[in-house]
Image 1 (tube, rainbow, N blue to C red):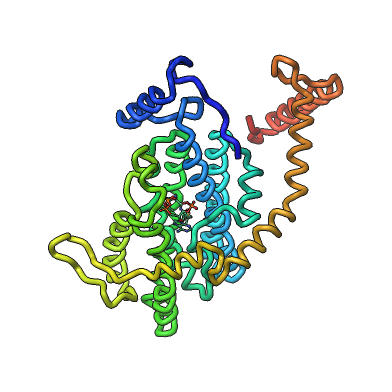
Image 2 (image 1 turned 60 degrees about the horizontal axis):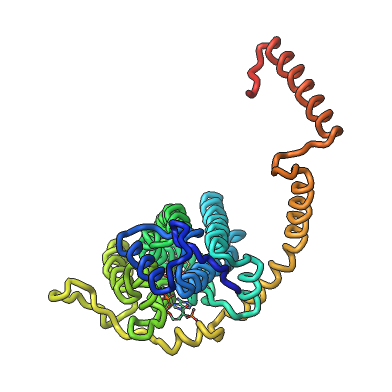
Length: 364
Ligand code: 3HC
């Protein structure tokens, strides 16, 4: 992935040396200004953003598989529609994020190659299986809940295209959280088998969800850069703590327990203290040895191959479209196309007139 040279500062001045440019860039960040794609930025900022946004995009796309499994098995039509919409949303989030990454001068097909070759990471949480219907509720409640805590601050991050994508994404994530918590509430108020199913699901997902926030601050190699440049506004541990604090009350409200014997309210800090996270498990999953890593990669490759014809058709369409443009970029229509278009509007006009004379409503 080659970063493109952007040698000018925002006033078009090329005479500034590297140190002056960095100083100017950092002043803009400190002043709360947004960095836009054509602005000068340090290579490390560009690389870090490309890494983070593309991993985020991959996570949204791979995140469709565990839930997609349940679309055909949703218990009612309403649940099926909700889940279908949610999975489609995740796909859309992936697309926004790939577009945001492309503004940094990378090609989406290169990013996809990195995912498919196993070089690029995606969120650890999506390497766990969905074993029961309750998992769909718990993912919505806890996984999307964690995503909201982690991603809402990103809507205020320093890079314009990423921040703007996050505004839309977080709104949809709020709907995901609500549909998940509603499923959990119904099951928690259901018969004993349903209560048992949802509690068992919470027990399996709780710890992997805490791992979603990334390694503890002392092991977070990228945080220093990202926080200095206001891409990340809060550290991994502080967001994790915020999530734990909120989840305790939500679990209590539906009479579920969180599987952590060390969970205690700390009067002094005002936080809920929690037990030790199994970081060995986290790194194993990140390195590709989680319960479903292989299955997720197999599926990603299959989907990529199955979609080849769509990419080819899109490329052919785009080439044809370009052929129909004049040198100045204006659309050029062949004589045959102009004639068809004229005939089309002639007939549409006739049909409208006939409908109008019959007193039928016509579309405008
Ligand atoms: N899963 C997989 N890898 C992870 C990880 C996780 N949960 N957390 C950290 N890592 C990786 C990092 O990518 C990094 O590896 P790299 O340097 O080789 O790229 C390494 O572990 C060290 O972690 P750092 O803390 O230094 O990494 P970051 O500073 O980038 O912080 C992050 C990690 C908190 C995930 C941050 O990148 C972030 O906030 N990203 C944006 C949000 C995101 O990607 N979320 C993924 C979930 S998407 C989702 O939830 C979809 C929703 O619909 C449910």
